[in-house]
Length: 186
Image 1 (cartoon, one colour):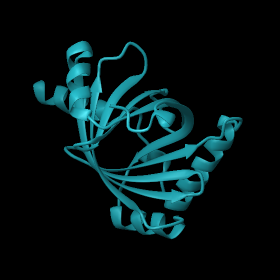
Image 2: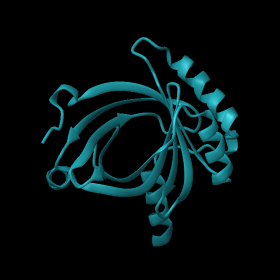
Image 3: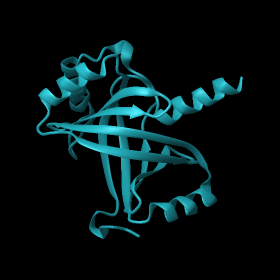
Image 4: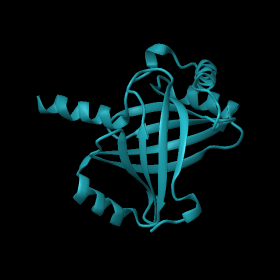
């Protein structure tokens, strides 16, 4: 089920921020002005599974294209370092069934993502089903690159996009969905 054995699993690090978007059109224009090329538009469904450490999700991009992603990062607002590994699959439905029966599903996040590339930074403009519009920055770190370098880059891109500290959020979209579900149960 692995699409490319050479790239089956890769360990990497990045510095991330996630924030609410106040004005989607303005942020989109600023991202486009900074970007190296036109954005890629991707529909994603992320299925989260029980995990004893970090988070484990299966990202389905198409019926025959998926990524199993394990990542660890602190749930704090502002730039934070994330370590992750990815395994690619050409049968995400079958993999989902196996993982669900072994670990149990926790949350499903559906989104449409616009991805802009600005140097080593990926800008994600996300329309998340049931939550709204967000921006995520991922500053990809080189093997020997210090976390502080990525944090500085994140702050620079935040400033250029007009992202304010008060816009930053902690955690993952899955956490926000879980909070919404719990508030509806009360």
